[in-house]
Image (tube, rainbow, N blue to C red; front, top):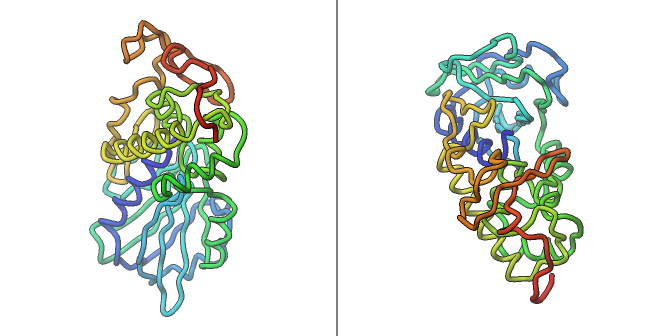
Length: 283
């Protein structure tokens, strides 16, 4: 947390309020919050924000200064937030980076991260390309159904683990993997190789529907997520299984939501998501 929908909400808010604004100052409170490119920080002063994009769970700010382009890539991690100055901020000692702007609808963008699992990377275009290649697989909001099915055809292992493998499918974390699999009627431990083509196609459609709906709801504010303007994501009100251990299945099948404990807990209905092989043409 945050995952793809939350990162997309962040990118859209920054794009709408700061695109075209000029950087007037860069303040970095601790050097270890920058994973790469710390010595280039002065380049960003007087640069203009020309793009804001989401890659997986990260947000990339693209700047132009003269004829050159560079990027600030923010990993949100488990507790990282990008916040406008106008947003009231708890525990301001955890603000590690401030980008000051003029000419936008906001005067400052702050990187707040108390547990510091995420980092910033200051990169040129070649560095950004390496960063994306190393970290991110297929983007579920950009890939075609054919690309998604083809990807599953060459993978093995458990389905939920695959959905959360960032170098294979970028942006899906524990919350949305649980919600997608419940709606698709697939057990978290189902072997990818056991899926039929039609099941893979259905999984693709449901994955896109869940992520798109979550984006439209502002994401899920389960623990620490807030958008840059301080608003909370409301998709948590539409979670069907995540965090619902012991509650009746929302499909009214007489099942009860169970929790599989592990590194990341899985929530599922043993009736609707029975772990069994399905007949049909396998991947």
